[in-house]
Length: 76
Image (cartoon, rainbow, N blue to C red):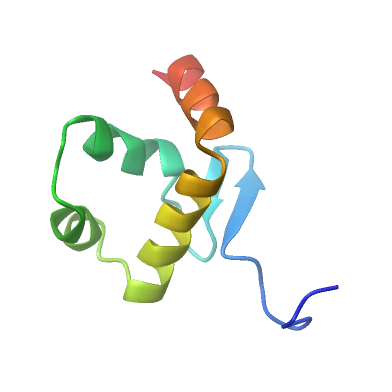
């Protein structure tokens, strides 16, 4: 049971892969910058994400790192 049943999930799976909801930005694009050791505030500004969108993406990556990294390696 969700604490916010009417709230849209922050990360969705689309035909492009794991995507930040309401955008065309994939987590794999974010991973490119993480792997290049960009500071997190620069990554957020690079993609014009809100704090909420960026925090959701980073939280998802942190919580599911093995899965996201595995998919990222397939994409690149």
